[in-house]
Structure formats: C-alpha cells, structure tokens
Image (cartoon, rainbow, N blue to C red; front, side):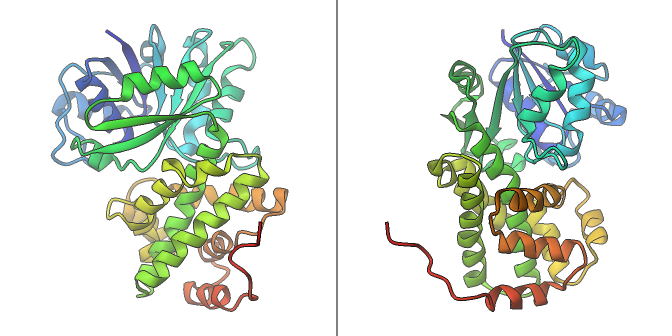
Length: 338
C-alpha cells in the first residue's frame, strides 16, 4: 500500500486526501491548525466541502514528523504564503530523494520563486534532504467537484520525468485523468497568474458587464500570461493546455472560484478587506499580485489587465476607471505576421 502525506487540511488538500484514500493509498493528513485536525478526526467532514464524506482510513495528525516519515509522496497543500514555513518545519524529517508534490498556486514575493522552487530552496539548505524529486500538480480542478468524484483533468509537471509519471499513476483513476508535462515553471506561472485574471473577471461581473467582457478578459488574460511565460523561457504549448487556458477558464467562470467571488464583490464596491473577509478562505490572486508586478518589471513584459487589478486592490483606482483605461489603450494588432 502506497503511503502518502498531505500537508494542509484545506478544501484542496482534503479533496485529494479523500481521492487518494479511495484509490487504496494509506493517507495521513497534517495541519498546522490543531482545530482543523480535531474537527476532521471527530466528524469526518470538512466545513467547506458539504456533502463530502472522508474515508475512515485517513489518519490525522498534528505532528509534522509523523506525517513526513516513511512516505512515498509528500503533498504540499498549504496556501502559497505558508509554503516556505511548512517546508522549513518538514525539512528535518524528509529523506533524500523524496517525491514532493506541490498543489498550491503562487509565486513568492521578493524571491520571485515558484512554489516548487521555494520548497527546494528551503528544504535543501543546511542539513536538509538532497535530490528532492519535485512535482507541480496543477490544472482546472475545483476541490468541490473533485470531492464529488466529478470528471477532472490535471497536469503532473516535473523536470524529473520518472517522478511525474509516478504521480500520474498514483493520482489517476476513473474520475481524475492526469497528464504529464516537463515545463514545470510554465505550469506554475499559469497557476499563479490565472488567479489574478479571475479577479478581473469577477470585477467585471460586479460592475454588471456581460459575457463579451468576460470572454475578452479570458482571451487577453491568457495572452498576458503567455507573454510573461515566453519571456521566462517557458514552453508556448503549456499556456494553451490544461494548466494554462483550462485552469484560467474554470477559475474565471465557476461559482466555486474564490478569486472570481472576491473580484465580484470588489466590482460591486466592497472594500478589498471586506471582500476577502466575506470569502472566508485564501484568495490567492491577491497574494500573487506583488510577484506578478515584479515579474512584469524584471522581464519587461506589459501586463495591462494584471496591472489594472493591482491598481484596484491597492486602492489606486476604481474598478470602472481601470476598465475605461483598458478600453482606451493605444490601438494594437492582435497578432503579428509570422
């Protein structure tokens, strides 16, 4: 029986823990929040996944050493802002050659590292493990649907093809289809930036705009993300795939999207802090903005929609003013002749 630890007991971590346990894996779930572990242990339910019942075989622990030791795979399912802190806590208990799968989406401000890069940087310092086998698992995957066994596709991305295929084998079943991709940085950039575009789509909804505007945001949004990815040396096909366009579409259009929901409230006039409070869970797009703006400057890539969302979140412009500016930008060709 394959032993897997899930670090993080949020909706995505628990949806995956449930799926893996139903796949026949021995699953251990750890959380830095003791109350989460107590609640899951006593009820077998998650407050933000109503209707989802978790197999009694799942083990819950508050001890990260117990979670990490003797596991084939460690799944990092903590919000991006806690990735480095969690890697630091786990480091003493992780062996050389460990497969580590990150399922969160973001870029660390300051270092501008993707999350697998953050994990490698933090875990391999001092006397930490060597030869980590890092995989980014990303795609159009709302936890609410995975927890109901609805058909879902995802990408296992790693420069280590063997590790990517091991993850593909373990996570794949009749409800989850897993593809591999060696462009791990491209997959991670897609995952981080699409959350910001989803905020823009929500803002558009909140302003009362229609499907035309949302289609434009999605289409021009993927153009922005692709330009940034190309400047960073990522593969063009990644951005038209599941981790790129696929994840962008679902996050911009789904009722399950926290980023879309937060953006809608901002568009309706709610202060940013109140919108985040009402969502009640981490809105990754807001946390990705500082890194996105820094990457735009570092690589000299214009990101007008992302910059507009940043202006709204930072209180530098109203949503409607941002839309007016975007619509009044200089004339451009959509593409250039090859």
